[in-house]
Length: 361
Picture 1 (cartoon, helix red, strand yellow):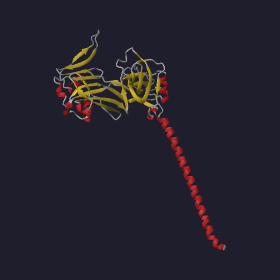
Picture 2 (cartoon, one colour):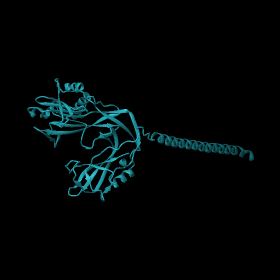
Picture 3 (cartoon, rainbow, N blue to C red):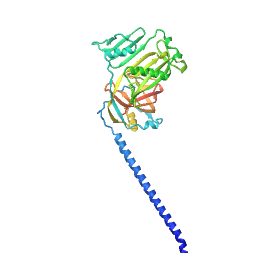
Picture 4 (cartoon, rainbow, N blue to C red):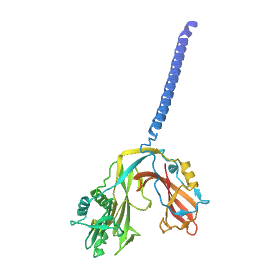
C-alpha cells in the first residue's frame, strides 16, 4: 500500500514547489514594480523642481503703472464661488520678456505708405507747443489718410464719397478671408507671427454708416467686419491698460476694402528672457483683500479711468482668473498680471460686468 502512495506524495511535493516558485516570482515582481514606481516619483519630483526653478535672469523687475478707477476700499466682499477649478490651479512660474517699440524712419515710412497707394512725400506734423516736437508723417488724399509715427503707430482711414460702394453684403468676405486679409496687411508692415507669438482674432459683424458704424444685430444685415488681432505668447494674451483696446484692428467693407486700420508695432526679444515665480491662488485672494489691485473696466461706467470720481463697490463675484502680459510702455517689459473678470455690484449702478488687473509676480 505504501508503494502505491509514493507517486501521489511525489506529485504533491512538485506542486508545492511550483506554488512556492510562483509565490516568490510574484513577490519579486511586486518588489521590482515598487522600485520602479519609487524611482519614477523621485525622478519626476527632481525634474519638476529643476524645471520650475525660477532663474530671475532679468533681475528685479519694476512694477508697471496700471491706471484704475478710484474705489472705496472698505468692506468689499470678493466671492470666488463661481471660479472654476481650472482658474484656481494657477501655474507656478512664467517667462518674462523685454520688448522695444518699432522705430520707423522716414525712408521706411515711405515704403509702408507705398503699400497703401501713397507714392508722394509726406507732410511732417509737429506739436503746437514751444518748442515744437515731431509727431508723425502724414499722407493725405481726397478720400484717404495715413499717419505713421516714429514709434511704430500706424493709422489709416478711407473716406469714400459714396458709402454705398462699401455696403453690398453680397460681396462681403467670409470671416476667415477677412481675418486673413488683415493678417497679411499687418505682416506687410513688418509684424510677423511665429511659433511663439500668434494672433487670436476677434470678429464682429457691423453695419456701416456715413460717419460711423454699429454692431449688426444679426449676420444677415451686416455689410462689414470689425476685426481685432490680439497678440499672444504661448496662449497668454498681451494687454494694455484698457482691456478692450487692440494692438491691431481694422474695419472691412465689401470687396475686401479696408476702411480703417490701426497698428501698434513692437518687437519682442525672445533671445532674452527670465523665469519668475507666480503668486498662488491664496496670494491672489490676499492681495484683493488688501486692495492691491486695479479695477480697469466697468461696463456701465463710461467716464475715463483718470476721472477723480470715486466708485463705491460692495461686492465682486469673480468668475474667471486668467494670466496675461501687461504691455509696460515705460519699462519695456511684458509684465505678468492676473486678469479677474466677473460681476461687480456698484452703488447707484447695480450689477455690471468688470475686470480687475493684479500683479502676478
